[in-house]
Amino acid sequence: MSIPEAIVHEHDVIVIGAGGAGLRAAIEASATGAKVAVICKSLLGKAHTVMAEGGMAAAMGHVDDRDNWEVHFADTMRGGGYLNNWVMAEHHAKEAPDRVRELEAWGAVFDRTKDGRILQRHFGGHRYQRLAHVGDRTGLEMIRTLQDHGIHQGLDVYMEMTVIALLRSGGRIAGVLGYDRERGRLRVWRAGAVILATGGIGKAYRITSNSWEYTGDGQSLAYEAGAEIMDMEFIQFHPTGMVWPPSVRGLLVTEGVRGEGGALRNSEGRRFMWDDIPEAYKNQVAADEEEAWRYVCGDKNAQRPPELLTRDHVARCINREVKAGRGSPHGGVFLDIAWIKSRVPNGEEYIKKKLPSMYHQFMQLAGVDITREAMEVGPTTHYCMGGVRVDGDTQMSSVPGLFAAGEVAAGLHGANRLGGNSLSDLVVFGRRAGESAARWAKEHGAAPVDNAQVESETARALAPFDRLNGENPYAIQSDLQNVMQRLVGMVRVQSELEEALGHIASLRARAANCGVVGHREYNPGWHTAIDLRNLLLVSEMITKSALLRPESRGGHFREDFPLRSEECTGFNLVASRADDGSMNIQRRQRPPIRADLQAIIERMK
Image (cartoon, rainbow, N blue to C red):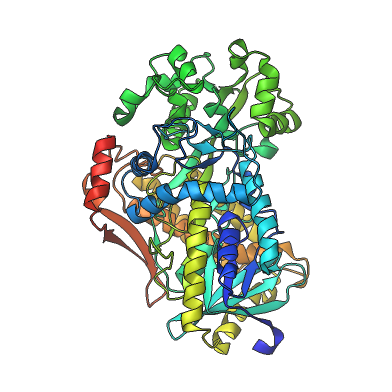
């Protein structure tokens, strides 16, 4: 296979991914005068960002004037188990309000307070009402706004493309190799800098809120290009995904339901979240249902409902109720928003106005009217806190010229992400990545593409066509999802993690012999074979990292090490590719936090 087969494109900056982070990065890079390409695996507008419903966290103080960036910073650090990149946490807390106002200036239509300011709602782990929102369709509004603004920036958008390799030359990034999913034609994009904004890894699991695109592409591409990958043991299981009917199992039920007063109940009708309040939050949780409701209504003297504790804790409490036999008929628990009709005039219309997407989602998909009956919900694989290790200021990885922003980048969220921090993360660090990448490309120019690497990667991508009697890639992916769901899920133990590693090794051997039939045009089996390589790689990273962290913290819960270890606070786990191709995972000591930021944390405790 020779390089002349490939269509070659020339740009200054390439952005892989067209969600919130990718679009914001592209807008910023283009604003500097750089020629920018946006490559997306699906169609423009189909980004996973549209599934983020509840809001974007920013300490604007519109509803509660006690809120400020210091409180947001402390909340983020505490929620992340103090493993966060504190440089990123500071930037995020300080810059998020400006990014919200920027979206508003570009046309985003946020819900408003009575005096006309942007309305903010409660969310788990946040001390005050902090989430700017558009009903329960905030991510959709973000994508609409960024697309409308970005389309005037002169971006070149390549839709329905799969990237199969990052091209390197002289120790730095030189471009991207991929193919169009419709025809299977190879393409090379040459550029001075590449920004990864590819999202997460949810399709490594059986039950997930993530859509089909989330196969760990960015993490795997970066790893194989020589970048360091950090914190992959920390997987967030969102406490509330749909559990019925089976066709939509795992589909997200926004935390906004709980922010508006939704109560979690077991089969006995009891609000079980009061049974287990973490020590760090005991003075921040309402004493009873009356105080919890006053908090929802904005009483500054009231404490939060226990349903608004951090996602990792709520998910484990739901799991406990189900295992104890107090779950709902289909293996979840009940999320009840209908109960607030007794508290709110014209309650049915109030619920429909506050949660329009949830009302239609349950009515159309499950035949459940949430204004009259409870939803059945349970934990679903939702978010990966780990990813490409980046510089906290520039978002550049350990490979010169390679940047990352959004879920594919590690650092901001530490061991556990607070709800709503994801949307503000996208625009805060998308902007920083775009600015830094454009500057890098201008200063260093484009490196020559190595034709030998293009030929080698192309041969690897096309190899399944030579194995007509090879194994079905769908069967391998299904088996991998079962292994990860069963053995590397919300509750982990050493013996099961070791068993999972054995299965992953066997699945990798099977994947090396998988085959596809037909040709490259419209061939979903081939696309799945390409995705398998990435899914197996991130699954190995998650499992090995989980074995090497002997404690429970945030999204990582070890049943054999149920407590947090002070020793483990001092390091992150970093994966890198060894010279022999094996995976090397090492403890990386964390830099000491700046004294003024540590003082903020201590004061907020």
